[in-house]
Structure formats: structure tokens, C-alpha cells
Amino acid sequence: MTTEVLVPRGRRPVDLFLVLRVLLAVGWTVVACVTLALGERESSIDHLAAAIADGHVHEVTVAGGLRPGSTGFATQQVRWRSGFVPYVAEVVQRSPGDAAGGDLPSGVPVVRQDIGERLAQRSPDVEVTRVPVRYAGSTLGKWWVPDWVAISGFALVALTLVLLARGPEPRWATRWGWFWTMALAPPFGVPAYLVLGRPRDPVPEGPDRRVTGFPALMLALVFLPLVWVVVTMPF
Image (cartoon, rainbow, N blue to C red; front, side):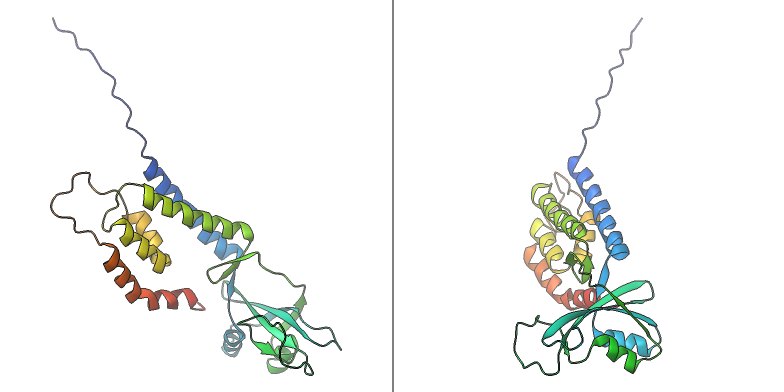
């Protein structure tokens, strides 16, 4: 008579790096959704004029500006919605008699006329509403977002780099290969790393054919113009 002894199987150890990769993917998805829900797409007055001419914009809100009779300059914010995307643009209103010079914001177009009056005159069918000035806490790429969204984005960047540096060797590309892909093409590189950057086999068969740092850098530079178009396109 034989007796069978059942030996309980040990639990498989939790793969902490897999858990971190999944959490990062969820975190990036949440930040992207919150950015679309609460953020405003940075744009320009030229884009607004084109949207009005195409009949896509019928309401505009204007914030800030010079008080009647005052001199100097002031920043004005223009907000509108085209489709499901909210947009915001800034201009500097400068009084007609104000001389050149002064500490003007860099990269912001200067107008001599109140932008709300200018829009009302050129596009009488567009409703212009005055609202208080509202500044976004931070910028995340080409989006104005609350501070906590930007902080969350920076934290996710740091954690993604920690996973890349301290985690197991990834597949398809070396650490440097994934780094350059994420650094120069973040809209594509980060999701690709989180999905495809699984650990490589402990004992790989054959030579290491992963993409190394320099080829990844060259490839990312080739696709950099496409990334710039995607990031800056007004939708």
C-alpha cells in the first residue's frame, strides 16, 4: 500500500516590474483623458480666424485687456471651441500711443486694438463674451492643464525612466534604444515601450538583435518631423 503525499505548490512571486508597467500604462491613460477633459489646446488667432471663416466657431470668450483710456499693454486670452476641442490663444493688447519697447511677453502676437472689438467688427455673426482672466496652472505639451495634471505627468515620466533603468532588460531594443525613442518621440515611444518593452528571455537564443542606442536615435530623428506635426497640429 502506497501513500501519496500532496505537497502544496508555492505561489509564483509577484513580478513588481510587470505591475509597475501596468500601473504606468493606466496612469498615462488617465492623464491623457483628464488632459482632454480639463485642458485647453494652445492655439493662435490665425487658427481662430480660419475656424470662423469655415463656420466652425460661433462663440468666443475674451479675458483681460486694457481699461478704456489707459496706456501700456496687457495680455488678453481668447477661448473658443471647435468640435469637441477647447482652444485658447493669447495676444498682447498695446495702446495706440504706447512707444515700442517694454517687457513684453516673448512669442505672443501684439495687437493695437482690443481683440474682442476686433473680432466683433470683422465677424459680426460671432458672439463675443467677456469673462475674467483665467490662467492655467501649467502646460503639458501643447495643452494648458491644472497644476496637478502636469505634476502627475512629470511623475509618470520619472517612474517610466526608473522602470527603464532599473527594470529587466527589455525586448526589441536596448535601454538606450528605448530611451531615445521615448525622448524624441514621446507620443509613440512611451506607449510602445510600455506595451512592447517586456523583459527579454534570460538566456536568449542566438545573437542579440535588439535595436541599440545609436540606430534608435537615428530612427527617432527621421520620424521627428512627423512627431512635431502630430504634437502641433490644431486638430
